[in-house]
Amino acid sequence: MSFEEMWRDLAPVGRYDATGGYRRYTLGAAELECRAWFREEAAKRGLTLETDRNGNLWAWWGDPAAGDAVVTGSHLDSVPDGGAFDGPLGVVSAFAAVDLLRSEGFVPRRPIAVTAFAEEEGARFGIACLGSRLLAGAISAEKAAGLTDAAGVRFGDVMAEAGFDPGPDPALMAKIGVYIELHVEQGRGLIDIGRSVAVGEAIWPHGRWRLDFTGEANHAGTTRLEDRRDPMLTYANTVLAARKKAAQGSAVATIGKLVCEPNGTNAVPSRVTAWLDARAPKETDLHAVVAEIERASAERAARDETGFAMVNESYTGDTPFDPVLRDRLALLLNNAPVLGTGAGHDAGVLSVAGVPTAMLFVRNPTGVSHSPAEYAEIPDCLEGVIALADVLRELAA
Ligand code: HGY
Ligand code: MN
Ligand code: MN
Image (cartoon, rainbow, N blue to C red; front, side, top):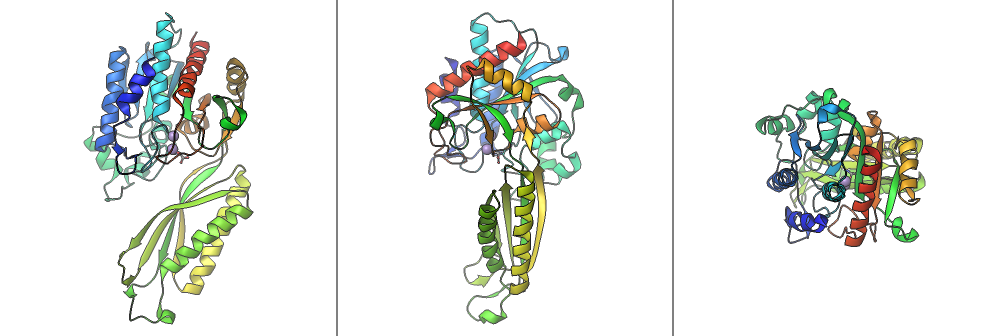
């Protein structure tokens, strides 16, 4: 099966040996190599490659102008030190499913496209699913252009240099009849029910908030404790409050990224910037927990005489997948289990934009993701390819 050959080709690209994690950041060297890999795979199959204005990659089987396409894919970018499967499994499986259909002599009645969306993780420019949000008009080109990476480089400049002109693409959106995203399962579910493939139910409401803590830089040795305005103290309390409020409020909250300025061992910081990732099965719970975290932080900032501000950077409400499509695929796939997920996906963005969308999850024995330890067994991955081929055959016949 072509899956294993593609998997082997892609595995070393952007892998950071010291951690075993992947560092594939949009339009960085490793991700450009992933793009070259996608182009080669498309060319090998005689698929027509299209790179849209937002840097999303499309490999067409059939004439896209016919419309009502069956589109399937995922993303090739990673979180810092992410695993091998989150994203690439969906893209490799899509190419392998096309191979399987072709080996049977299947001729699709609708165009089929394999896709890879840009900046799904938001690891470089901070907003997840940036490529699909731009495509769907869910974020303005102006707002996206101003996003900056850790070095302060603007998304607008990087994209212009690469020859892209980010913005909504309603004509391309109109060509998508249905979108199917196969993805490695994130979280434990399938291993406990002894199945290798699940169908997606919905994506939890989730969002990202930037937290700005400001204080007064001072000497670590000569400044009395009572004279300090230390933003690190307020920040530290916010981390503890986030965990406590999430636990009390049926949500999850994570602070996994922070920037400390000036970041000196012997200096009380002047500013700490951190990012809150909060999610919950119920939208009302999510809003309540985020409000609680904001209140607790503001109270602590008053005590510490520091400044505190919280800015919502991205938000996705409750995102159910198309229920008719969901049930049709579950039935088709031998009564596959139907599982919700706390992970965001381009499929969620397209679903919110009105595209009938479904997800397939491939068993992850430990459930671990966004980590070098993320894995799926190859036999399960091959089951996923067969399931995806069954779905494409059903939808494009
Ligand atoms: O953050 C997420 O849920 C996804 O992996 N981008
Ligand atoms: Mn991810
Ligand atoms: Mn993903």
